[in-house]
Length: 175
Image (cartoon, rainbow, N blue to C red):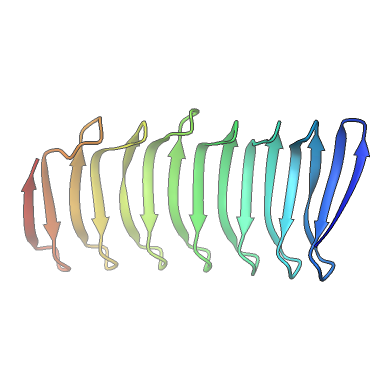
């Protein structure tokens, strides 16, 4: 791997390359910290990710792609922490998961997880980093497998139900 840099006062443009001559990454340092847009590539030259930095911390929208060019994930950062959202995708383009974040970087809000075929796998809500309220897990055929409840502190709460593939109740737990 080779490395090329150009300095402009306290700013430095940086690029590194794979041994085959393909660019590996490109961005700028300001006072020794990553600043602005940085791009990263796979060894075959396909774009791997684009990330934004401010004072060395990720800031704003970040995206990454699979080697075939399909979107892998999209997220938003504030001060180097997840903020607002994070979406991930399967190679086939279907959504894998959706997670929301508050300004402190804690998970907060709706959460959804999907099977690769696009069918919902799990859904619920997170409050200040803890599972909260009703959570449902599903079989791939769309039938609920488990219904769970959590209190505001993330503790198991109420009656939990477990179902078989056709939706018959096969288990009940009280919390």
